[in-house]
Length: 350
Ligand SMILES: [Zn+2]
Image (cartoon, rainbow, N blue to C red; front, side, top):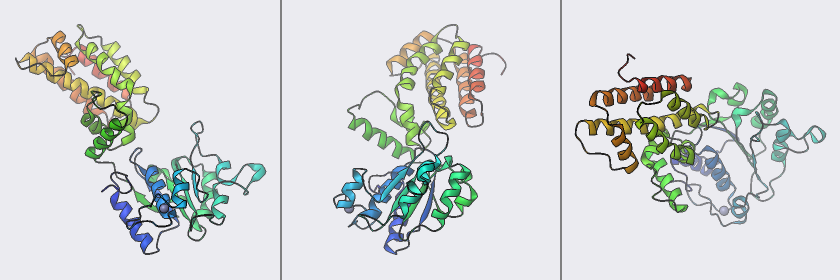
């Protein structure tokens, strides 16, 4: 069963439930794990449950008491959440200790020292812990070392290596594993159903596989520009002669539109290359007298392509090579260029 509706982290939830039952919840935690596996959602659900007036066994919030109602409305006086503003590179010091005029009279650290107003304890979540400057981290040290009695502070980052040693040593680390592919697929399916978008045609199983256990990445892969690119990709692959430069440029554009994060870019490229693999596999099957694919757009593109078995086989191999190179290549632009050039001259020496 998914703890409080959160997929994939029941074991962590069980540990917190045990700690709470034994009165041994620590004062400072550091949650780490790749983006999009549910760390922030978990932290908020944990705060909700730890603040609840009558949680059920297994540390499950009742969602009805005064505390839960306020928390669910994001207006709980004892639950604090601070994150990096999107336009900033680091978490501003002001958010932690107040602006220079009001230093130590507002901010995350100051609020934590107030007496709880509604719950039995103060709960504070700091997202984007990867983006704490040295100065901001220093401000947090004392708070992390000696949180007020009963208070629970949760820092959320991606890897331990990205946290300063002084922060790491003051927190209990909780590691969040990537989600199972089946869990990602189930969540996507539920989200599409909730939006009335079932049958959008997206291959959710393929998206979940390509997402590598990150729901955030899966949602990105499902978004419109990647989906829209598929038709264009098929027509580029099917054109004769294949325009390698155009294929390379347009693929890179879609990959770069994922933003700066390398895992998201790689995930996009992976799904594009998997579509190309599917295309060349279908081309190979047709070349040896097999049935055309069921998918209409794919069948049309393969019908236009019409190359022999050897060329289909070579293109398939080049694409599989590129796919397996994604994790090894820091520079996706070079990888995409090389792949496109090989498709343009599939028989050439590689
Ligand atoms: Zn409650």
